[in-house]
Image (cartoon, rainbow, N blue to C red):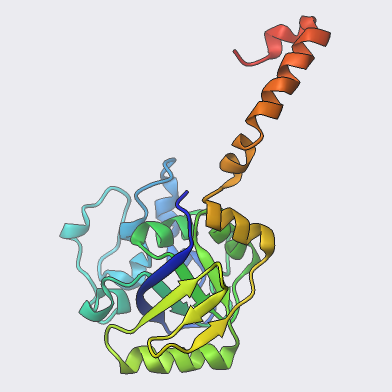
Length: 216
């Protein structure tokens, strides 16, 4: 997955509490066995006026002009601002897939659902927890200033506002290491590839009768 070091982007505000994963990516889109192509259906039932199904051409859909992501000032947004308990509901990993594939790199909220929070890190997204009052102030500023941007500096663990004010945030050390280096679970495993090969070779040498069970 892509490394996350410093990201600067326009902020899109989703001013709703308890946004669940079915709102993020509705259940009909879970039929796909691929890990790609979910971005066009992010917030599908809010984003479009017609009912969506897998395989539809987004150009043929009826966008909801009142939804945040369809408004011109937010169409290039890559930082998502949300209210508390974002990502609740079912544990579908498709939710962070859709958010990431739409173009978001960082999410800011007072709280996230636990499984969604963990899945974000595994897919190159940085979910940032800030105090509710701080988030409320960010909502006011985003709505007041078109093109409002934030800079997220993971190395320094700060969110930098346009005027230079820095807001610190916490992130667990191992998760920070993985994001900075672009390591998902597979990437972490591949770091040990030499040890894995050595183990397999030793296993074959000491237990040759197991050779037919080993990958070739």
